[in-house]
Amino acid sequence: MSLLFIALAPVIVILIYIYIKDKYEKEPLSFLFENFILGAIVSIVVTLVLGYFIQRLFPITNKESIIQQFIKAFFIVGFVEEFSKYIIVRYHAQKNAEFNEPFDGIVYALVVSMGFAALENIIYVYQYGFTTGLTRAFTAIPAHATFGILMGYFMGKAKFSKNNVKYNLLGLLVATVFHGAYDFFLFLDFLPGIAIGAFISLLIGVLLSKKAITKHQDISQFKT
Image (cartoon, rainbow, N blue to C red):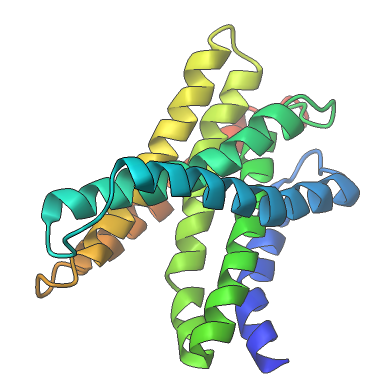
């Protein structure tokens, strides 16, 4: 039970945080839970299937090749994982009547991302132990949250814009870039000290996420 707790605790904390930040018109818990489960199940399945085919196209044969690690970080991992979340937000949450203000883009993208992160974290923690869970609570889980918030910021704009295709794809692109950058520096573990780049990219993502939350809060039509 302690392993399950350390795997899920940071996810729950972040979910509570975004629920509190949704100040003016909270989403129904049943629909949030539905998107969380889709993030946990559908996103993982899409990631495994799509990742398999992309890895066949771009096989990683040299772990010390910067170019190959770039491809792995941005395309095999970053794009695949963010696309798997994107399709749920785009074709399930965004089409629902409950998605009725820009901030909802942040809420649902974050919830889907946390569904994905929860299952992934359970797998990692049960495989590698408590220390891994503790480390990921302050690294990988917040990273997934920032990717979701940044994607959701643009997808929230997309729902209420004539340029919905542009903003939706921009959300996917921004999430992929930040995810890819975070992983890229971690994958270059054969270069001493380079991992600091991952934490810098995460810090930038967190700061931008806070700005994104504030901006969408300020333009809520439910704000009184």
